[in-house]
Structures are given as C-alpha cells and as structure tokens.
Length: 382
Image (cartoon, rainbow, N blue to C red; front, side, top):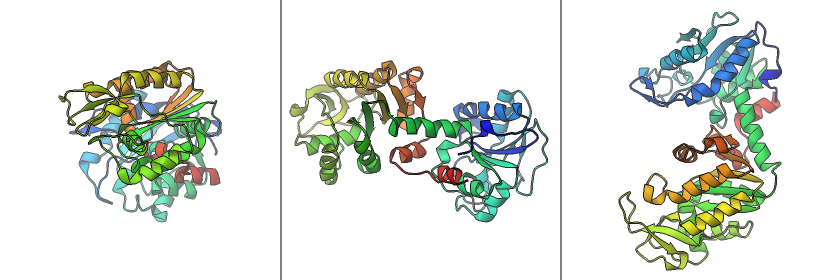
C-alpha cells in the first residue's frame, strides 16, 4: 500500500476518509475518542503543506435523505477546537470545493448522498475528484464496500492508506502472520455462531485458545458437562468438538453461577462438575481466572476479543477483570478489539498495558477471520 507519510503533499488537495461516527445526544458529542484519533493524521497533512478535505459518515440515515440529527456540523466545531484553527463545514461538495493549502474542510455526512452504501461508481468518482489524492484512514469502515470507503479509492488518481488504517493492519498482521510464540487467543461472546469464522481461523493459528461467555458454555456442553439453563447453542456442539481438536482449549476449573440473569441475582462459585439444572453460568471462577492469568503471562502474543463473563454486572465481572489485568501486565505483544472488549478495557482501566487497541469492530473481526477488507484490497491493488 502507498502510505500517506511517504508522499509529497505540498500544495495538494488531500481527501481523507476518517471515522467520525461518534455518539451524539441532542446534537452534542458524548465521546470524541474517534475525533481525537484522527487529529495526528490531519496535523501531519497540514504540516506537509496540504489542503485537507475530510469525509465521514455518522449513524444510519435513510439512503439519500438529510437527517439534521445526524449532521456532522458538531464534529466540525470540535475539530476546530482540537486543531486550534477554523474547520469549514460544507454541505454541498460533490461539484468541488474551493480550498487553499493550510485550510481544513469537513464535508457533510457521506450517507446523505444517494448511492453511498450501494457503492455507486458515479458518486465514487465525484468523491475521488474532490482532491489530488484520496486517503483511507477509517479502519472501522474498511470492511464495507461503499462509495467513500472502497469505490473512491479505485477511482482516485492516487489512493493511499492513512496512519490509523495502516497501523491497524500492521498490528493485526503482526499478531496473526508473524506472532511471537506462543500465540494465545481469547475469544468470548454470547454465541458461537457469530464468531464461528473467527474461531475456525484462530484455531489454525493459535497455540492456545481461551473461550468465554456463552461461547464457553457450548464448549463445556461439548465436553460432556452440564451447563444447567445457561445460554448455549446445542446445535453447534459438533462444531465446538471439531475446533477443540485443532487447538488446546482449556475448560474452566470453576464457574460463577446464578439462578437468573440479573444484577441482583445471588452469585455462587461451583466446580464445573457441580453445575445444577437451575444454574446459569455467568462468569469464570477465581481458580480459573488465576490459571488463565498464568497462561496469559507465558504468552508471546495475545489476541483478545470479548469479555469472559457478564462484566457489566459486578457479581459476574471478576473473571473479565482478572483477564484484562493479566493481559495488561503481560510482556507479550497484545492486540484487543471489539465493542464489549473496549468497554471492559475502559471499565478496568488497563488501556496503557495493551500494545494495540483496535478502533474497528466489524473490521477487526473480519481481519481476525482471515478476510481481506474491501478498502485494503483496493489500496493494495492501487
């Protein structure tokens, strides 16, 4: 891939597709993390003498319709504050933008344009024509083949990767293709079916796989133990058995159970062979957390996707807390991603100890599944 840092940007109009899909309440930004992540890229382009045109989507408006509640206007205001210079907000931009080197323009929500999600080639061409080069820096949308994420890259005179996207791809490649051994993966979530492709791909690459959440229950059932009334996909027991034949998947020694799924439910710790018909498994137990933390400490590379218990409820959060802290304390190269994983990292304040935290949800998962992201394919071919 061409990389933005290595290109001559002086007096060039540089179009950068960023991910400013930030949470909003009544027109106010409630978290500017994604905006902050883009600031170094914008500053670098400005420092190299570029005129910067920013594109992004926000939310899921009806195709081609303008919804004021999903306008990027508040993002322009926040960008102005962070960059300490005016950021001009432009609603009508498809016929071209008058911009000078050193200026920054943010265009209105790309999803207000008919044909964005359908990857319309005419729209893609108009977006690409806004500048002398088109930069893809929004890893979180790189798995979508849309006009502003894939089509414009193919239509552009020069297409390159921005620092955010490049660092994401590089980190995942380092973890999966060139890992320091042993490679330990932690995959958790409510259902095996939603992460089946990930489990299959990781099983071929990892030296050890720790599973948690509802996924763990399916593997426990596959091993012949009772799971009571725990969340489970019994029809995927044969699949779980097949995956367990490919990679070492340790079962928990103990688990935290309750008679119902509720924050005020009474939690108790049971050995795996003591789970009764009325129990719901909602977390790994303390002995398991200690044993798994030891495995994490011995890893050379760690890939983490998903909390191992219902961490939002205090009674069932200790397993995820222990795993998160073990990863942060490890000397391994660690990469973590996924919405619930990021929430757990924030809740247990372990971000500083993790080597790389992915900004992408679906894109991160698809990379771990071994898929080539449409935007990455377009950049590679360009």
